[in-house]
Image (tube, rainbow, N blue to C red; front, side, top):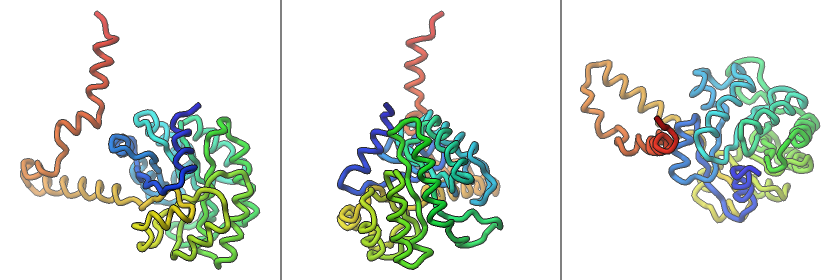
Length: 286
């Protein structure tokens, strides 16, 4: 039994809305764990930049993402939900994706219905057919070697399709054996209510309308179990690195950065110094 997967299931089977930590590498996952976040989410966009230095296009592959997940779950005891893109291919590719991500310790795997664009920077390339997505989700569910792994049906339909089509897709995805759904592109409370009416599965949501983000009662009442607020942590980290390096490059004093730096005590906790000293004292014998 995976403790991390059981923890994820407890969150989505509850009756409240939990804020997830959108992380991008082992360090950010470690800090989220220290702060008590129950769920961490690795999204494709920041994961590619942080781990490969490339934009959010098809320049990464399944193995790249699996490697990032393995390094995260190895260093941080978190329940990790990962953006598995479109399963990295057809339904058969999705089978391998699920098995590799399971082996890397992932708790929940998102399979999206976005059509993978053939050209860079193409906005809203559209969706694959409802039937193709259902096949991918069924294949992903069947591929699990651990039944506690959660397959998440991710859909952008509410941002790209008429409401009736989005509702129809969500209802169809909910019959595939997937145990949660993820919604992107939601633009109104009415869409959230319609999604809740279309599925009995727990819902995870990315960047809902501003007037709902601070209304946990409304979100929880409409089946939202995990709330994701995009990737502000990544953007803050990038700016901090850029500004500190620029300051030093332009001749600024290192001392000027003192108030912006983590304390030695925080660094020691983040890098688990005491834990490894304890291992050293217990097991190294001369």
